Length: 271
Image 1: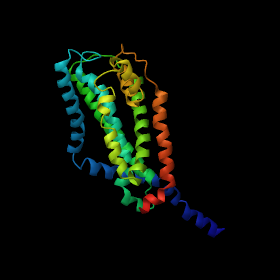
Image 2: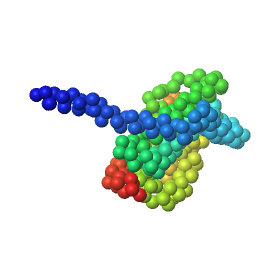
Image 3: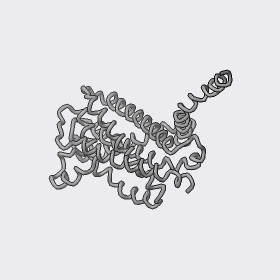
Image 4: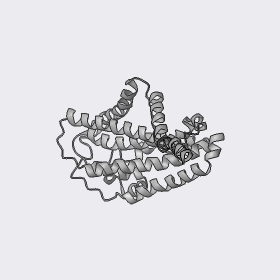
């Protein structure tokens, strides 16, 4: 009786450690990622804001010379921001997820760190950073241009949720592919360079000719930029948006990415 009681007392404190071990590993990886990606000073995060701001301003300056008004509304800044920030979220999040294993490979030798921890840590940090950047930029545009519009947050939140799903799915699949086949990273980079032109950043789906609409419909990002703008422009009512299609494009690679990473997790550790 005494030995049993003593052994149970000794084992009890270890339970919380096992339960929260994964969470502690994720937090530690997030802090490490913050220091390496953005530095220990606020300058890194300022640069994360200035990059999309510079691109939006460049688009505004270029197209305001050629066009009297954007396809929707009167603000070039707001129109391009509602498209570019969606693309930016996808690119940054997919890139963060795809490089999670390669970036943290040395840490996978520790038994308390798994490939899931590295993926989750990078995804969380990228999502929080891009949401912060989007909030700052959009709020600044509304204040600077004195825009008074009633926002519909339902499609805006849906856009961010679906963009995160799409980026995490593709990024997880790419995490395995880029680590197992280094040439894949180069192929993916080349294949996705035209995304700025084909994702509805500086035009709407309805502006395109019928043939272009049929081709670009298969780009899930053009669904998301259209959905995003419905939250800012009450008169905009696109009919091409299919969230089911976007969900499939995000879920299928996520499934196979997790399956491959789990199947070859030991190969990743010792490669």
